Image (tube, rainbow, N blue to C red; front, top):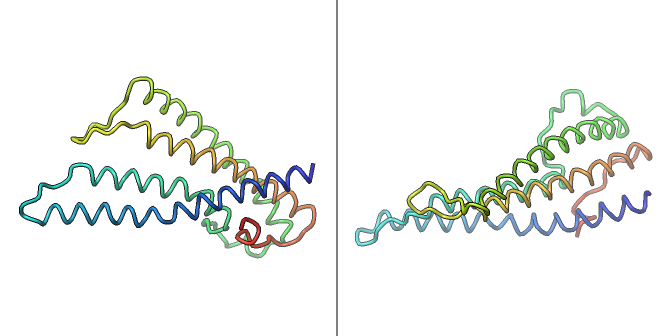
Length: 179
């Protein structure tokens, strides 16, 4: 079973690492979209683009939701360290394994709602209510994909916590494992 857990963690972390590294560069695409928006609003002979604000919002959704698993993998998520920092590695792993179960339940509910929303968007051709009126299924697909990747990463974190509880060893650097 430990071989399965180690293989799962390696596979998921390698995949999420690559997705996260790609996702980091979406910020530059978003900056380009917003610069184009500013440019078209200030040049007198150009009409302002209708699509830029909503496209920037869609890119921000992709940036956050696809970058979430990468953030968890690198252990850059925020936690209250008042008491936690004084714990031993085993106790930290126990607390983390306890809280990751709540994360997985939360992500399960999000996934259920996201799949229902995506199905509705595809089935009825849902469009945004803005003047641009883009189809909503692409951004909802990104959201469901990000939730699935986050759920896979949460399971990998649970497996790592179980191993840390068993050995009492500190966590290794995730970027070394994933690359």
